[in-house]
View 1 (cartoon, rainbow, N blue to C red):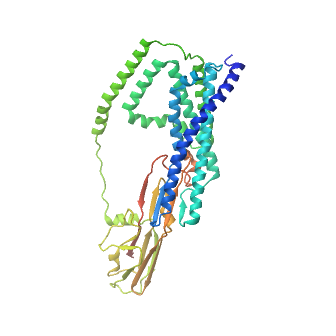
View 2 (view 1 turned 90 degrees about the vertical axis):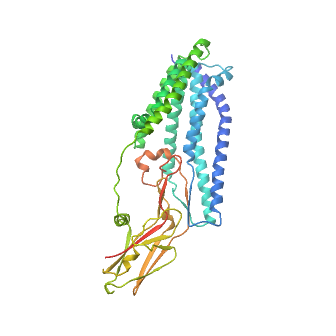
View 3 (view 1 turned 30 degrees about the vertical axis):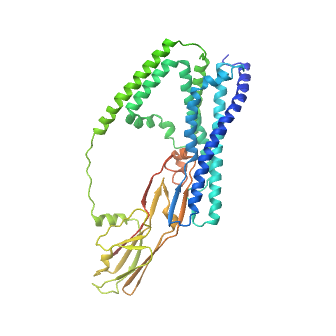
Length: 450
């Protein structure tokens, strides 16, 4: 028989002991996470309560679930290398290869389930604290609103991915313990190939793993993830069942393995710089089409809102005076640029020359509000930008108003961004880590006569 009743008893006994040991690791893990988390929260609150708040500001908070995932993987890689040491400390308990291995895996899976719940607790605490601050400070908005369905589904997606990663780490650990020196040489060689061919690996690896990474149905993903996870666990348990951990492999074999690994590592250090230089030296020619200023302006305002004012009562060749209200920045050059980016939150007006020597019957005023995308979320809309235009006699007045806005981007379960059900709903950040931003924080107004 593969396992007998005594082994099940050993697994339960070892699991209880390892959970007690793991409890200390959990406390340290969550203590560090809480320190980082509370520091981020305190920084956000301090910035929100500053008296010199500008018209527009955003706060991109880290995705605690993605950070937990990365930290946990690093922790389990370390755990893989101290596996034998931990089991040596528990050698007073009745155990076998199977009971040691299976109890360790169960312990790790329980830990990750708790980590996922902790990420949710941190998320709700952060959200609730900012909501409380918003009671006393106006104009605080969330780029991502709470969705119970997404939070629940995201938790199980997080568990699926973490279980897969843990099973892979444990499989590598089993292989290293079963064929220690041969496996070390093989892994070093594979790592060498990956590093020296990193561009190709980065291109083809997502395709190979696409059946998991690119699956867009949550139900299909969960079925695939469970099937792959069970297969990896089964292979790991099978190999582990025939592993002897406490044998002496001999110093000669150890020295040979170390020598081979050292040679491969040195080869990497020598070959890699030349590979990088060769790749960098490759150049590609490209051509770009220069677009005229007028064509660029027309294209830029293609989707802008329009205000049409009848000016048929004005004689041909007359002029229209322009009065700029607050927050208006008017160009003084013909065909002035229509886009200003940066922190200038005014409205920029172009096309002023069209108000001189008018030859049409309609005054067309196009308005493109500011747009600022961060990790796929449109934030400038929270300023509620508004343009008004009125013609009194031969005088045109343009006003632009916007509200101050503090936008908090509080993401969670960023790994769920691959699924169709969550796309285009403002629930998932485009970046698991880091930030991507772009756009124009300045409104643009274009005047012309038709």
